[in-house]
Length: 144
Image (cartoon, rainbow, N blue to C red; front, top):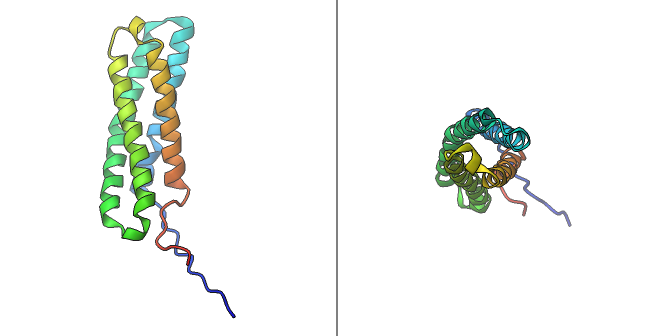
């Protein structure tokens, strides 16, 4: 008796999608680091720098979310569950980043500690999204 399995071909991210996914993590991480710098020094420029980094992460992240949404409708039903998880994590990253941008739009003194906490959550979600996206999570076939 012979056991056969079809492992499916690993389908990596499209190169442009991979580039778009590469930006939010370092931008949100930079915002988290600048929030820590603001918390320790209270120089207002750190809060401004954090706001700009969050805006950049949201801008590029919006295109990555849009690409993931399009992939969700283009792929077959076998990989829908995996793509839904990826899309939801990306969307949650963008949503927390947007709320973080609203918090950072307030006066610099009013951004702490909520801005720091939201930056940490957003960075963690961006790390999870990048991990899922680059880990070969998108498979064309299932193991049988």
